[in-house]
Length: 509
Image (cartoon, rainbow, N blue to C red):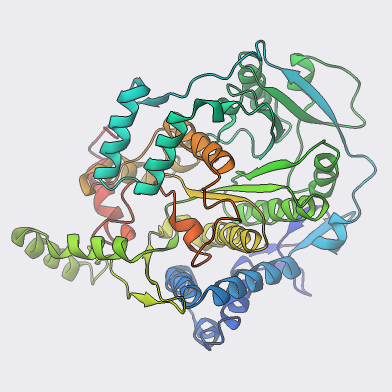
């Protein structure tokens, strides 16, 4: 709960008549609107819920299950959730609240102009290699590692096959024909380092902080791409690396309309990746800001494509085979292990070693699907809402004929995650349960290549011309969940045990 004040600006949670803002009530209202679209009466249970912060995963899973019942219901739920969010959130300007739509339609006259910085050699894209545990994997070595990850259930076969296609088609890596927008360009696991090796034109949006732009400028200067940076229109004129480092930057939360206007001024179609992350309730706000941006760009240029990196710690619809594999692994536990786990479950009152099982849902399209719940309670309901908004936008936009790349990225040891001591310890102990945690350099190499695949491969599900039996199949494909989808246990029910193991280890390997 927070208070509204005259100093507030930009995207904010809605304020009540007494000036208070409740993130909990807003999230519940958004999910309630989504449930209303199911026609199942499930919103009544949600309205009566008194333990929202503990029980929210139950409702997220219910919503995904309802979405699987029919393709039409999946679209209706996603639209209802997005519409409710758009209506609820406010944009504060000069001490007054506006609707998000009204703010986006009236950007300030003091906006942005473009500062351009080119890499030292734009002659050819670099070859694709994957940094992994002190090595640089390429060629046959990389292919063998992809095979190993697939056999271990770390990544889904569709993810491995997409990366094999990129490896076999190096011409795809020349991105000089594309203008790629990174909202949260300095994201630790994001693709910026590789785009600057593949001749891309990158419109980078990140805060005006010299240390942020120092990294972006260095990667640009040593690469072969072109950096397009927003500089305030009132800033002094200039050019070059030092100028970009000192003057570039913008705030997604407070300058959303002006950023949309700046991006619309760039030539050609845009490929927009929503990557920004902030802690706590600000993560929801920045997700709302990015959604307002991509909506404005899509309305102005229907050829805009969207990209998202989904978190594995969420609820997903999955193929029936994935659900059966997790259930089978639970049933195949050794007898001694079963006894010990049963004892621990009893002591913990059922909190530990919960089976990763769900009901199989037969959709109206004749296909059978399951769900997997990998939510980690420590990340909280704000995190779940922020990531749900991105899944909903991906579903709705793809159904409307827009190219959308959304792939599950592996759990990654970024600073934003490992600063939480429990999650850091859980990461170090994850391998005891067959889950692999990736270093940022590995993740950004894999996910950058996957984005290229989704832009270049005419058979990729990102292309709206490729038929889907169900809208959620878009997110089932291309997943690198680190093993969480096929884990025999509910992820959060073994996180404390992984953390106990991790507290005795100095590294993840």
